[in-house]
Structure formats: structure tokens, C-alpha cells
View 1 (cartoon, rainbow over the protein chains, first blue to last red):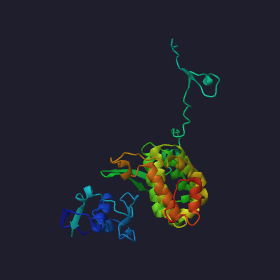
View 2 (cartoon, rainbow over the protein chains, first blue to last red; view 1 turned 60 degrees about the horizontal axis):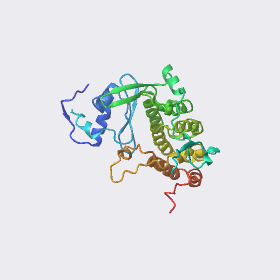
View 3 (tube, helix red, strand yellow; view 1 turned 60 degrees about the vertical axis):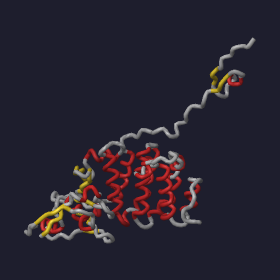
Amino acid sequence: MSSPKSMSRATGWSEEVENLFRFQQAGYRDEVEYVQVKHGASVDKWPESGFVKKLQLRDNTFYYYNRRRECPDEDVHKVKVYVY
Amino acid sequence: MPRYRKELQAQAFTVKATMKNSVVAAPPSAGAFRERPTKPTTFRKFYERGDFPMALQHSSKGNRIAWKVEIEKLDYHHYLPLFFDGLCETVHPYEFFARQGIHDMLEHGGPKIQPVIPQLIIPIKNALNTRNRHVICNTLKILQHLVMSGEMVGEALVPYYKQILLILNMYKNMNINSGDGIVYSQQKRENVGDLIQETLEMFERYGGEDAFIYIKYMVPTYESCMIT
């Protein structure tokens, strides 16, 4: 199981930051950890924007996300960006 | 010598009202805008029984719904009318669940929404008839989402305009004239008059060719946003 080498906080919003925000709301670090925990399951994404659409939590319930941006500006600096 | 005459209060359409020094009392209020209290909804009953496949998750960013079953596998004919029934609720968490649940189901419904439309009309009419400003605003936003949620949904709604547009006629001019002040309700999309105008424009846009005529029949002061 690969673990990240370092972590920093996001400074500005971008599509990657939006997806990281969605994963962290669901209780995962990022897509890498989600795929490891869910044993290779693919992540459902909205076709137009590429944002995450649906995630399964560790207790097997589901979170559904909007097509548009959900991460407000005041929460961008709380998003953690991991480097492997 | 001047005679002191007191003015007499009199009810309208009586003999006393015809006297010279009688003042006719104002008519009693008809109560068109009075809020109607709602009886407990089926949504609340089902929620308290635990029949809904969802749970409330509290997070630092507010509340979210966690679905226990994938939305794509839900029976829309059973669940969607129940959620629309919950639109009349004003108490937390019922109001939040109904609103967010409808939003999620409409986002992911696709072609499953259109066959359910006839069953949604009565809950929508009940929600609009509560005359509660907050409930009306929520219902209008959901109606806007509904017409955009799938193909043919807007056109499927057209035959039911005469049931749901009546109440909008009353609230259409509820705009505040604040001069040059800032009205935050407009920015937060809580201004009823503007929301109604937006909703009617969406109905016309997504309702097909006859939509404008039907809307005009129910809301005569509405002007088309598509025909110049």
C-alpha cells in the first residue's frame, strides 16, 4: 500500500482541488487511497466537468456530488494535497 | 348653534350605513395570503419508520445525505412522490432531507423521471398552497430543476399547468421596492416574485410550442421571453 511522502495545503481552486475536496469529504485522502480501499473500483465522474460524481464510503453508504463546483473559496485552504 | 355629531361605525350594506354620520367599517380580510398549517405528511411518517435508504451525516461543512442504496437502483415511482410530499415540511431535518433527496434523485434520474410526473403534481400543488414563503421558494427552485432534469419532462408538465400555476399568479408581483437600497433576498434567490418569473421562463423554454399559451392562460401578466 503506497503512502504519501509529503502533504501541503491547496492555495487556489482548481479541478484537482475540487476532486480532492470531494474525496476528503468522503473520508479518503485522494483517488489513490479510494482505489486501494475499494480494491480497484473505478470512480464515477461527471462527463462534462470531470468532477467526482459518486463515492462509496467506508461504511458502504454513498455520497453523490453536483455537476458544478461544490468547494467554496473559504474551504480551499483546508484541502490537503498529497505527494507520492 | 353647531350640533356635535359623533361618527357611527356601521357595517356595510345595512340600513345604518345609509345614515349621514355613519362610517362604514372596512371589509374583513379574506386571508388569501394567510399561511395554511399542514397536517403531518406521509414523508414524515416514512422517515420516522426508517423506510428511506438514507442517513444524515454531520460534517464541518454542513449536513449531507449518505445514501445506503445507489440512487440508480431506487424505484422512482415509489420514492419520488414521497420526497415531493416532504416539500411541505418546515422543520429540520425533514425539510433538509426532502429538499436534498429530491435534488439528488433528479440529478441522477435521467429517463426514469418523466413517467413519474403525474404522481408529483398533487404534492407540488399542496406545497404551493401552504402559502409559506420559504416552502414556495424551495418548491420553485425544485420545479426549475425538474424541468431541466430530463428530456420531455418540461413538455410532460404542460397539461398540469392549470393545477400548479394558479398560486403563482397571486405571488408574481411580490417584489420589494427598496429604491436604491440593496435587497439581499434577490441575491440569495429568496425573492418570490423574481423566482416565479425565472420559473415561468424555464417552463416556456423547456415546455415546447404550446407552453406559452398555457402559461398565459393561467398567469395573464406573464410576457414571453422567447417570442420577440
